[in-house]
Image (cartoon, rainbow, N blue to C red; front, side, top):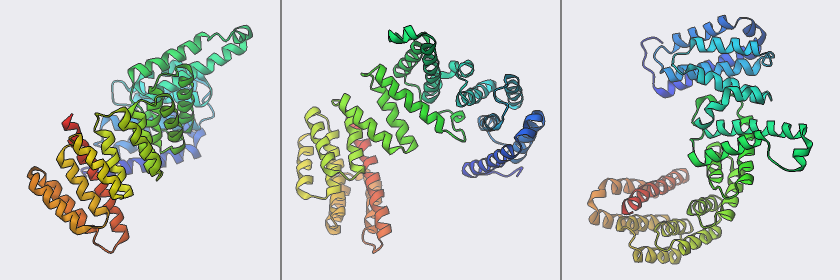
Length: 397
């Protein structure tokens, strides 16, 4: 492979295959790996550098981190701290970046958490708690779990329901995250082979945070982000319900509920959300925009023209209304009228000729006697409309 220039996608796929090969080797030969850590890591580095001589230092170090976690996750010696130090020393020795210790500390800390050694895990993880929400919730979980052990040792404190030192640290960390809003799912070290325990910890602490700080909407917001990232429909539904109940005047949660209703083909429910938004935000164009989107899906003319009239009265940008007019006619299978609408759009807004050309091309697919092609065209049309309108509506603000 030396001298070859590979695309990022091919490099990623080949790295993934190499990682899988090493994971399989570790699983089959864990005792042998533990007995010859320097030789094993040397072999890993040799294979990595031979196959990928030009990869970035970040990617290189992330690969070493993933191998390190797998070695620890498979070994029967993970409760032996001398063994952990050996793994750590070998991993750091081969890494390239100056902060090489950070990635190794994180993967070792995560393994200790998975193994139930929360006290030692904190030594490796606590200084990185604000780098990523899932790392922060993991550290908070360690504190919280240790606090439960405090109460078991002190039954009198338990009867008085007074938080111990460890619980106070967990509460402080959760509140600090709500204030500073660190990123989520941003660290490669969190992309471990079996992330289920991290997900379980994350949700445990998000709901615990909501119990401790019931008015802190960030816990719901970051939970929704993670539910979308992991495609967890059940958690998304539960959080939308919590958000709409506790923060029913907040447009963020009403917007989430609207899209959730649409995805579940609950047009009546989505209409109810739109009506609530219009009442709460009478001077905002977004509720009207959402109403127009809903009318596209129901294709009811009376509903569409009702929202269109409202859009005109609130001075929604004419180019946005023009695109909606074209889309509504096309989705109602009136191809001739749709083409008339796009011609009017071209005449009135020559600066958007590029988009008109795209819409004409999409419209041609609606004439094809091909159901699969029409479904793709419909999705492309609605996605492009949302993108165009979001830009134009933001420009008006």
